[in-house]
Length: 387
Image (cartoon, rainbow, N blue to C red; front, side, top):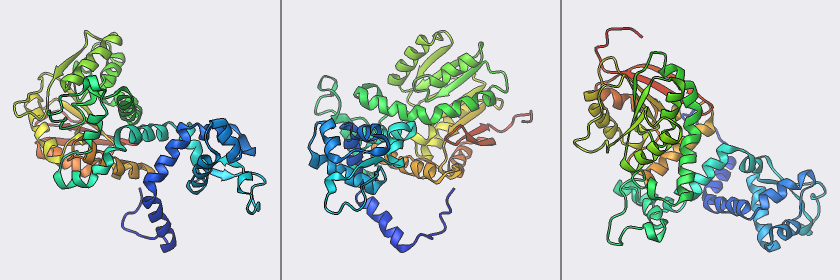
């Protein structure tokens, strides 16, 4: 984790960092163009000898001028570097040969970078313009851009209000937006799932309540891990339909059932009788006050022997600065796209909201999976047995 109490960067470097932020939107679009036009791949395929702008333009079928401006900003971004024989050419810029840089390699070959890029491009980019107004109003005003992106035949009447949050919209968004959203969601949680399974099943489980079960990914893993366990998925109606479909396709229709529910509704009640409750990347979708409200409702269905598991990526529990930065940036998506009032939390923030609901955090495991997830195990007071 970086030390946020220090500001040791040199002034000249700080000024450069400021320019990266200033030109950030244009730089993003430039990399998007390099990918869409196939230029990044053309340069990669050219190997160590590289390719000229004119050569890349001919292969891509676009103007040499357009390719050159993209390649030159690519140099500044570290996406490209100049190849052999390019130095000292004077005014003969057209003869420069461009080679794929380390940063460019990540855009082509690194799954995390591509998942993040597609998520920002398809889900966040247009709505980000509404960030300031979203902060002023406390509403995800950028969500209207996804509302406008729906196919005409699926659009609501013009006079109808758009969705209040992205979660109720997921089942009706265009396929490319859904694909990018779910890829982003699953990429980060799936590695943590594998390490969390033996921790959750350290005790024999009969029934697990999966709140915010999404596409039934966790529920299916549980049923594969334990041949006897049953899982009840609690989610919004559109999501439970998808979850049931996926559970059936995996062969677990009889052991995975759905409970459609808006957990924020005043009269919402959770099914009772589960010996474990699972919430993965769920509570970060709500404000801290809403987290406490949801957990209070859960408290009515959970007994002292019920283990409540919360899987989250806390930005203050990351090993790498890039990971902490990414999570801090994702909070902006929550502000202007997802719901207007939640974020990626620090560990103590979320634990505090859970404890206000009357639960006790018994155990915390950090660093699960490649993406440094944290698994909290909570319970209601009064359990007689030890850990």
